[in-house]
Amino acid sequence: MDYDYNTLELKTFYRYSVNQDVLQKAVEHNKPVRLMSETIRSLGYEVERGASLTGSSHVTYRADLLVKQNGKPKSAVFFIKADKKDEQINAVTKVIIMKLDLNDVDVFVLSYPELHEEAKKILNLFNIFYVDSLHSKDLQSVAALLFGRGGV
Image (tube, rainbow, N blue to C red; front, side, top):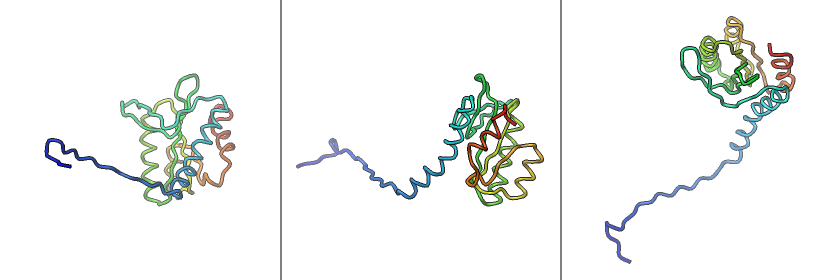
């Protein structure tokens, strides 16, 4: 078989293998978000996962869960996954900026690990309701607390 530069075609092939442990962790990590959205939906609200919101400054933000009532945004739920103090403070700061820019939308923070005291103090200072140590809580109870009687 003869080859020349006119018929030469370079193709790159990739082969991936999925680490089953990592895949299982990703599924378990997403489980609270899915369970929370299903529970809130069962309480009569519309729920969007990974939704975008535009603040009064015309900046677009991404909420882990956007809860709507009658088609209008009611609440934005943000999950904190970090357990290091600096990462939690950084995440809380971002949530505060979003809260200040999102008019007429309640903002809630749900944290997988326990929040450090400084993060709790900052959230309390800005009147942001939070639930930490989410893995040790019953998600249906948390959703009922937040949305069972019209929200907090």
